[in-house]
Length: 66
Length: 532
Ligand SMILES: Cc1cc2nc3c(=O)[nH]c(=O)nc-3n(C[C@H](O)[C@H](O)[C@H](O)COP(=O)(O)OP(=O)(O)OC[C@H]3O[C@@H](n4cnc5c(N)ncnc54)[C@H](O)[C@@H]3O)c2cc1C
Image (tube, rainbow over all chains, first blue to last red; front, side, top):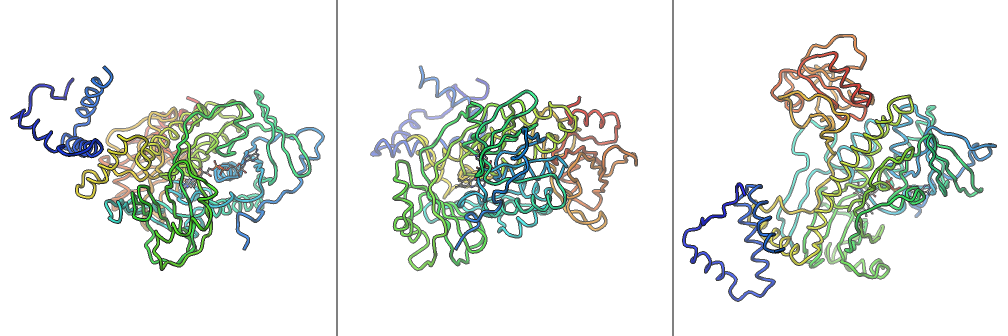
């Protein structure tokens, strides 16, 4: 994995995780899926790097088919 | 009122072949007088190749189908002598607007630069284009070109042999047989020729149905493409609005899968839908209503011995992006000069290059139109969630707007790494690289005025810009200067001081150099003629 950072890279891990859960609070499954879709698109654009995005997609796929 | 598609335009007439003792042989038979077959026949006839066009019908395509014809198609029609009429009878547009609900979220300009003779698109009813093409074909025939169009001649059997194709043809006066040196099958998506040869048409169909209504109305709306996601008048679905000539507007409404086609086509169902789109006060009359769903398919190979497939017979795309007729016409443009060369004794490998180049183009078109389809009519909960997220974000954020995919409109394929491509020189612009269609430019008065593409003609030619080239040459040459012509310089020279281009008869670029090198030009020509 060349470009995708897979070592700890976020300050305040627990705080971020709590914030991520908090925005889903009270949403049903469909609303959560919509929120996640918007979030992924915002983050993907922020990252920009096509190779890193493909690497992340491949990595995420791996857990889905394991 | 009888309409153009209800009037026999090339009525049945008995041909001498029908009374011949043995099947008459013709160098080329074109199956189908749709836009693709007609373009193929005109191109071949202009090259002096005798051609017989057979169509089971005797009139232009029934009802309203394609309306958007792209710049590249217009440039091909220019070469075939009917571009100007298509543009004059059509309405020109360059801009597309995309709405979410009632709010405009994105607009695009398909031709954001000057110096092109033709616009990004004209809208013109397919039957008008076919009528223009039939007339052009007739004019050529009257001027002595060896071309015939036989209406009510339905091909009922095809026998493929190694040096010819045998055809059985049904007519109102009974059947007859023909031999074709080459059969160009332009007989549409349901291609009987393909079926009779037992060839597959792999791909997939889509379930969503779309209602087309052509309405006559007066409107001051500008001539632009308008596309809606989830509009108030068609909740949860999409809608498209296009101006056509003579006060006709095309409305295209997504109406979902599993519908009762007959019920949906009834005026009492259609008129309220249109009212809710155009407003209660709108005055309009229905000119045409139909329902379509679509498929994306492609034959594995477009050449099978002496049978060559083009247009919808070879490949089918979804209508988003107007890539059907536009790409089929480019098939014919690619094939015409190659088939003419082969008949004149050239290498048959030219026909394999037709297969290579147009399969590449078909794949590009299918990819683009499938991606648009996945956006417009999402196939899963996840794809719908992402689609809606893009639309949502696009209203507020610039980054999401280019992701909005309401159809990526037809552009010509660049035959990168194609079998006919020769040398490329460094420093020259990417848009005029080998494989690309020649890019137009306005020529100033010093250079004789007019447009670059008109200078290139319909055979191989050399284009020399600020480079010395011997006076005597085997090929026709166009000599220009880019001094004081910044557009020409930007499109054809880039960082170089001068350039020589070898241009194919279909006006695609074969090879290019920054200085004259006779042997290299000869080698590139050999390669482009598949002799190398
Ligand atoms: C609603 C709709 C909108 C579209 N919009 C666009 C658009 O805006 N732009 C665009 O580029 N494309 C568009 N298309 C696609 C376009 O209409 C087709 O790609 C185009 O018609 C293909 O042309 P063709 O000549 O290959 O085949 P066709 O037009 O289907 O012609 C085939 C011909 O073969 C003849 N034939 C069939 N069988 C036989 C036989 N046995 N013997 C003799 N003749 C036979 C038929 O009579 C017919 O004339 C649209 C299509 C639809 C349905």
